[in-house]
Image (cartoon, rainbow, N blue to C red):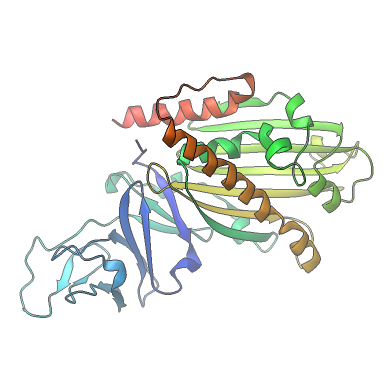
Length: 336
């Protein structure tokens, strides 16, 4: 089941550069389009005439034209033109969805239109700020979206899935602090005077021991913001003075496509080396980090499909992911 009265990310804004974008979200086929005015529409990807997908049509002005018989629809889903006749039946319409562009992401509300509140969209300001440099991408992942959320929130997998990049045995020793605030979940791990992850140690030019931190905020159903970084040990970074370290914000939008496929839109944003191409190239390894996540989750999904009734055990390290699943399950339960 999915939480419907919620905002999901459907893509990066530049995914609309060609005018049309087809996405399946929560098992619903949707077409996004940007017209001459610059306004974005989101409609059920099905013409009400003969069910041809509108995503194989074209944009005409501020409307979308079906590629089968030329019927046109506005952003509200109302048919405005049928080429072979003057009158348009009043029931010639399809479902429309509230859609917003914020921080370069395309956000869509999947539930009751009247309940759509833009104030509920998290502010990932660093995605479109001149004070941050970003590495962005999109992955199509063949696994359930909750399993993919799990691996982003579970940092204890790093020494095993990412041994040469983010791997750090310190993550296994430090118990996270997990706090629920309203409808979000927050987690913090601090690693004082310890060996920092190799990627951060190199970026921050740390000699010997370092202080590093890993904080995240999960906003159900499917967005996560990480605040991570490292500094030379004893320079005050864990108390708030990050002058001698580096800070990285990771934004993850993990949008369910079907029960076993997921859209992953992500960005790695940094506050250092903004115009340094060597830093950009060095941190490009983050793509490999996330591809490693994809590989293990897709392999996991194959076994889940083969053993759908298998029981899973919980262990102490699962505390953050269990809390996240409980929070989402409660919201879905309340919706129904």
